[in-house]
Image 1 (cartoon, protein in one colour):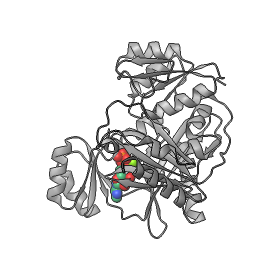
Image 2: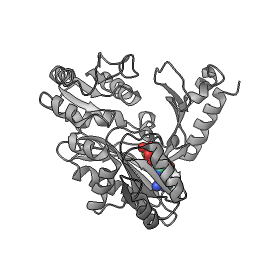
Image 3: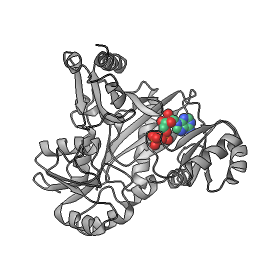
Image 4: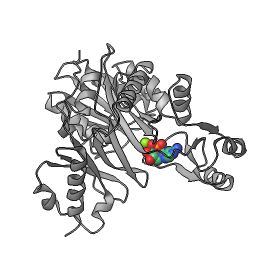
Length: 374
Ligand SMILES: Nc1ncnc2c1ncn2[C@@H]1O[C@H](COP(=O)(O)OP(=O)(O)O)[C@@H](O)[C@H]1O
Ligand SMILES: [Mg+2]
């Protein structure tokens, strides 16, 4: 066990690292973050912020020597960095789940090989691959870069072979072509797994996207009991086969007929789990801390809640009217301390609690609307 008072190292320094650091510091841990950027959301609340490239293995090694355990809040940390740090401190989760989740082709191949339900997909390495793949999957389809995609970046919906070829030329790297899924709902499950195989999970969240960026999450998602049980069981199976120690989120598409497909994996806390800070006795961030430090994991209690993201767009007409939001009860404001409010950039979020997840979503949306109404 890595007890309170120890030092937790974090690869990555965005808002997920910030919320992890706040949770860890409450429990008496020291937190040091490592990323290529300075003055970051996590760095400004951590005990130390190390600024170096992930490929600077001397810096990574020095970081590994300073801390008692390393976790991450960003899944694109190179496996070489994980290996260099792991000589001096356990890195949780380890390279295996990162290597799989860093690349959509490897991720989908892993899912297919383990008999886990996922979307139909084909690797696209050269323009000619699109011809057969497009015929086999049909249109519309979604072309995505295999690596480094997030918040809808690096993906295009394509309706014809011509559009697919144009999109491939534009994305200009290894891609995956996916069948377009006409899903009824998107849901996600955030769960934690300990070194001894212990497993806990949060209630499935329903996620609504706007412009491919998460806009609203509400939990518990309104799902038939069998579907809710299935998404949790799949999450547990995925985490066990990848031997994850830490937190992982699985994003699912659920069709009208109740069919469940895995969309993607995130081996870290997830935007759809932010509401667990107010809704649960143990949040997704405390669950990550407990899992990577070998503390007991307990199944969280959870109240109905909803979260809405605050993108930079909210600042378009100047400083938002914070007082209007802060006069609401059962509404919590989170800001990540980012200086520049660019459109599409995640600046913060609002969580609301209520009797039902739907009412919580209405409350959170109303609070967000009031920010810009003045
Ligand atoms: N094959 C697909 N069919 C239908 N919608 C999709 C498909 N792939 C992605 N989307 C939509 O775009 C969103 C973002 O895609 P995702 O693969 O999760 O990438 P990321 O979250 O890494 O940007 C999804 O949550 C979903 O709303
Ligand atoms: Mg996604």
